[in-house]
Image 1 (spheres, rainbow, N blue to C red):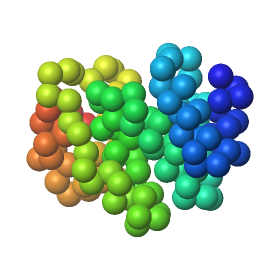
Image 2: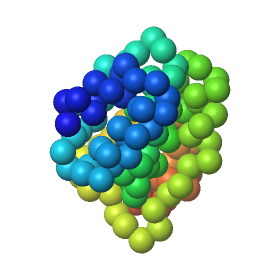
Image 3: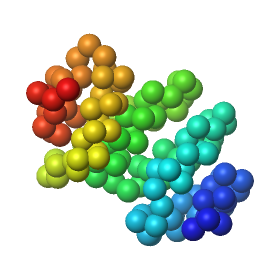
Length: 127
């Protein structure tokens, strides 16, 4: 896994995409902490790779990845999160709920409780 994660940071777009696909085959073998170097990189392309990989887990992880990218300083990257997918038949885990409660007020400061994400996740009364 270490080689694949390093390839995400140093490989060409095509090679990084192949490494991402291999990592998504075994999502339990890596965590968000493993993507820290990509997520905090000054290079927008590397932050986009982290978003794409996190989003590839699907479910609430996909929604969380979209919310995270919406907070990016780069407007092109932030726009990627606007077409967010919200799971309809799954509740978020406790760690996902916690992350959602952290992100939603940052993305929609004045009206996050009335967002569709908060409604579907059952978060309207939390925080």
